[in-house]
Length: 418
Image 1 (spheres, rainbow, N blue to C red):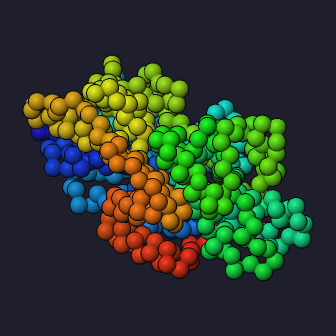
Image 2: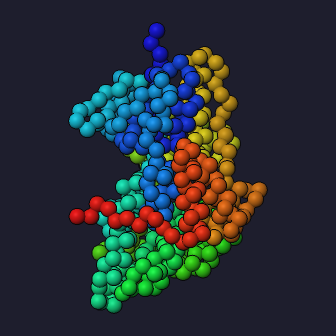
Image 3: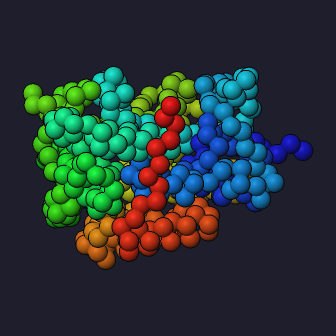
């Protein structure tokens, strides 16, 4: 008798949570991802800031799932979904593949959006993949190298100015870490320039950074950034990004490196399914993550917009994807075994956290709000705990401890430059 076939598109937090829920179920699982690795995205900014290497926050998908005989991994990019024929169509590089399914889970995440200014991407790269992170690292480190070789004071000043656009957790964490890199770790490595004169500018369009946090923690984060030497611009609207720098209103701020952390756009899952999406491209799903009018199709994580049984909006964070994936897996298991469906989904808020350099962080758990050094250590423990694989946890922990004690960064490599 043929087992039901569950196709999961995307091997991020949500997709892997579905696999875990079904790993012992009488099903055949196919995981499709356009990359061969699972990425621990919350630490991606540390790769961009030359703190961690890519291998410390990424693990091959085949390695993760090698012990599950009911799971097949396919590396390919999904291009369309035929819900009538129950097929996923994917580009496998040298050929097209049609993959049949009985149950389909789309967990394809999101990409950065430039709000209609896509031409800015070449100047202000976003941060969603390892390729993005290494490109930003290369651009930033090359700016220091070129400043070292320049004799023009204005050009040196421009090259030593780094602008981060977007004051959410990624932007705040990125700005704080880069400031430490420039003002401490690089301070004695150049002869003709003084990296301590580097300007790191964080630009946020709303009245405060970390707008999803309580106002007191948001203010504490801004103050902690300023202590690190970051210039914090709030209520500042970016009108242009070009080769000379970033424009706020009608004022140009010359900058050699611009990093985009201001917005995200969902994958084209809504277009694949031919269903309604919100302004960010996310599929509007039912309370159980199913898609109305599409039999046995579920959408989770950043790709979905959903309100749980208590009326809470499920945020596009790792915990939302994990919890959604677990719930979808339990629903599929109940359907194929004939057991009652699980209780209505309720999102459990595990808290918001953001770090500011090596000494400070802010954490909001609802019942408990923290800031400062203790929050930083808690942030580190939580993120290491969720890393996939013991080797990754140990490597990151040792690297962080070495970095904290010595201010040394061992991943300042410029690669791919001809």
